[in-house]
Length: 417
View 1 (cartoon, rainbow, N blue to C red):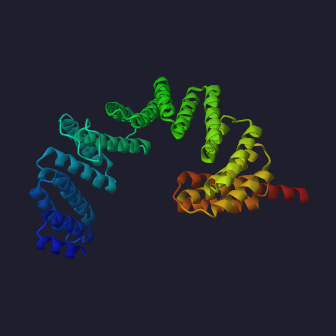
View 2 (cartoon, rainbow, N blue to C red):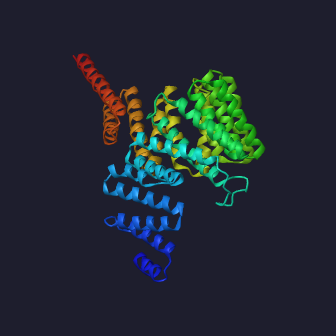
């Protein structure tokens, strides 16, 4: 169909349509992709269509990626003459490298992308894309997209530990994101930037700055009448209090979360609020269990099997901490029943840990044969997922169960003698 599209475009002749057809053909045919994408690029250059040129270079980068020709990716940058196309190419290369797992190279290209966007931000071209207000230039919009993309990448790298020790860098980009949102008088973007900036300051242990940012988020969220954002702000402020050791202050914010959730009748928010509050009841197992009972009712009303399974597990752990192992076993069995309905790695790991908790209960009750069976199930799951820490726990449990069971056998022999 795309071949016929190209033939018709050549007959007309419609150069723009020829470019689109070449692009579509390149996406379908991996072996001849480069030929079609270069044809698309040639048409875009002839028409002076910078956006199409950027797409063509991006598709060429994707083709090199698909063919395993990673060294050629870099050469694409030097084939571009104008700055906006260079920025677009750097952005496309960043995506390609990120897909390859080469995050350091991806970051370099995003930084080049952002640098060029900053240069172009000062030009006074009229807004012509996406129906933006006339006082916003297209290059300002371009800068906003670059900054936002880079912030997302930096945050992901920090969260995964790939930029360990560089959390200050994340803060700098969030500050730039906030400054631009203010320039654009975009209150929703300002709220998001304050939220992210506050989380970054909290990660750095700068709790006063973190609180200040979250209070700005709260103020903007209330002005926008955005209940989700208000809920998030209360939660973030509570988390800052926890980090400071101000548990009483944290409880106040989490209770405000709960009150808001009940006011707007949002069951999911209400369940999340109970999750926050239950952590404040550590050591008070009776209060903790009551919170979980309420949360379980909400999970069932929401028909959220994942949340319901998690709450059953937490109720079982609470009963274990209370020393009521028979009741704990019942909750872990209900957790396993719910997890059978779910798929995915996370659910499988939860299933393995439920086996481990059941094994702990049976071990505490002196039923070492039953404990051993569940530890073996736990170990099988941990090995299948290659979770070393869980494997270690399962092996430790098996060792203790075998040792305790052997000791009981010896004791019973001596008693018989």
